[in-house]
Length: 109
Image 1 (cartoon, rainbow, N blue to C red):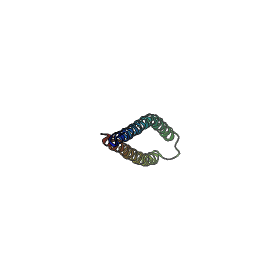
Image 2 (cartoon, rainbow, N blue to C red; image 1 turned 180 degrees about the vertical axis):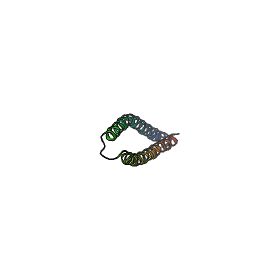
Image 3 (cartoon, rainbow, N blue to C red; image 1 turned 135 degrees about the vertical axis):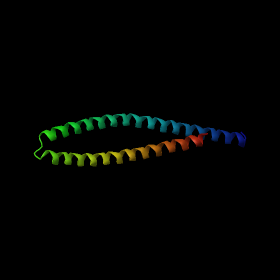
Image 4 (cartoon, one colour; image 1 turned 180 degrees about the horizontal axis):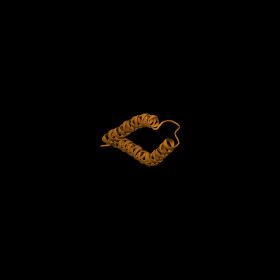
């Protein structure tokens, strides 16, 4: 075997390993998509539960209506801010994963 053939075989093996790793990354991203679907179902159920709990809370509240509405408004704002932060964090993580995949794809090309 010549040195060129040896280099070619090593290069071919390296390319195959990179392709396998890229396939693993893609399947991992698919798994994350499935998990995200489950997460969105949970968030919808959580939102519905909060709405129903809010309505029942207003009906059975011991405080005056205006005070209760202010409390609900404040808690809703807090919850919305927390939700926004989590969405932004998830978006940043997803962008990082996509940039890693793009870098791997560029290395293969």
